[in-house]
Length: 180
Image (cartoon, rainbow, N blue to C red; front, side, top):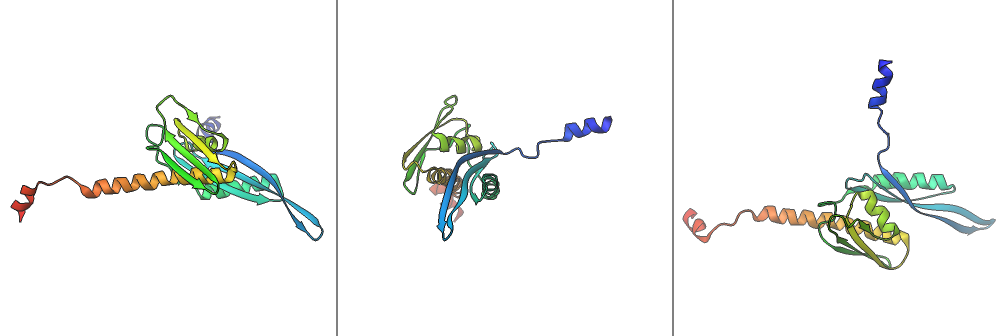
């Protein structure tokens, strides 16, 4: 009896990732014998703590397409800079015909965003943000633009941190003359 109790306590869920299917499309191509029908799935995977990735999977069956997209999304995961449950600064990104705008929000604002952007933002774990998409309503382009914007936050934040570290404390002109 004691062993079973211990197993129950240590047994954790194998998958503690947030997985959301954004879109499933039925695509067909025409061949000599008729049409070949396949399915394309767009999936977002995140841990709710700052890691996220999207994946696109294609297969003859919906469940296979979702599982392929899921594995691709897990492979492409990256970290996102989150400051006080929001993003550090506003950012705009374009992908195809879709243009998205992400803006940090005060605590208590919650997520104000459309369907595709909302799914990605919730998977990342951002709690307060305002987002708007303009132009194309193509969910794949919106998802790519959103990930591009989140990825650019990391690059610019890292650039800011390295510039800050390189400058160091300021020296007076008199201190440099005394040393030489």
